[in-house]
Length: 169
Image (cartoon, rainbow, N blue to C red; front, side, top):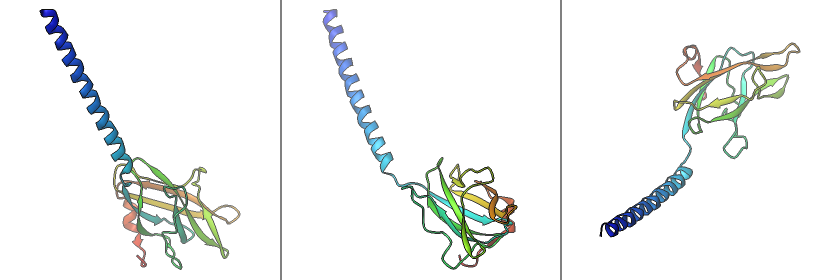
């Protein structure tokens, strides 16, 4: 008789274990499905032209699809030196995206997308929903525009207090 009770207990434990596994699998599938369908987070960017020799005529960000956005700087407007503007981009926390800027040099739009170490310019969404970015554009020995400095932080940078917001925003 003890054997029968023991066998029945093992059957009910196996049944309980099977049900628990089904519930766990169902929960995992639901969680994965829900996680994939969520919209990306929005990152608010403060972008400054810091002590540059050039006004920035365009700022373009790589989109989720891999293409480039339209310029965040409106047509016929510029981002002058020591000024900033604000914009929002969809970007999940812990992710980054590339960007590039354009400047006008000798009546020609020049595209700049590398930092001084020849890395792509990028915007990082770290721990905050706001990112403070700044870029400095100077000239090389031949007089061509180059990115000579670039940086960013999740906290308000002291240097931003020296910048003014553009009049067109």
